[in-house]
Image (cartoon, rainbow, N blue to C red; front, side, top):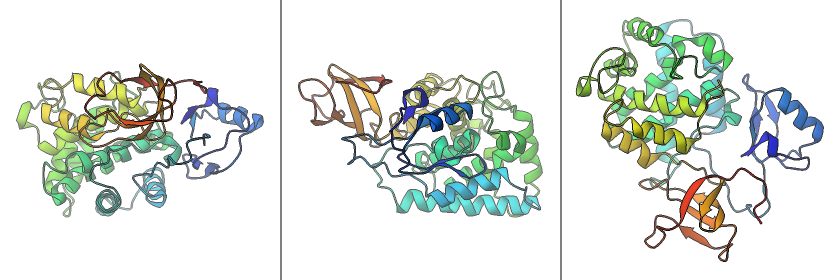
Length: 345
């Protein structure tokens, strides 16, 4: 992913870039021109996935298929369902497909990468779809698959508390970057009358704005907060920090540090530990600053040590060699953040 300001005429688009209504803005393999770059700037596009010479063997595999991403985004931004029962039924249908993608198409050791905005065209859709995906993955050892799906369905239902914000793609309308809790509490109260909605889904939806030390809404504290809500509460903060649209978005590694700082006060420590063991702070194909060599490209991150991925060194005396930063003897190599220039030689 290159910031738009670093893209140049002649760069080749590496993956489709979509608008919020699902239309294709840029096609894979398209060559950027000066006119296209000026249009993208006018439309507010911030980053573009581009092909890079020498990175041909790095082929990041999306966690969710394009068709599923498009259908969930269209469901959130299109005509509301006819009834709350239809709303719940569709949420569980989608979460079942998310579960299949997680269990059937990804190795258990792979660290999770969130759903980027260029795939949805909508930051709010990326935030909430990433939240559902992350809950399915990170909480998989905390409860049965059926129960985790019930928790994750709450992440797909939550945006219906404010459909207009989803249509706008707005993330970060409050002081803390989160939407007001009252609409989601009203949604949970309304949905609990639906005969087919499981009680764990309602509890997760109703309590995910509670905080470990009792300062949230509702004012529950510690283990009085339902377990699914503990997970969704921390995950919502993480994804909303990353996808904020008010100019205060954080990079994934920064957002993970922010959430880790709330362990024991805002969030349960085991939940924070689960997230930091699961989320890849740097995506495959991302160029990072690394000491002492200078620059490396991320090849693969694994569960357990996602912040210590396998990388290819791009500068220094060992340029071209691949190292696993989680291996013994690699302690002196430290990732210092994304590399924000085009060239490293």
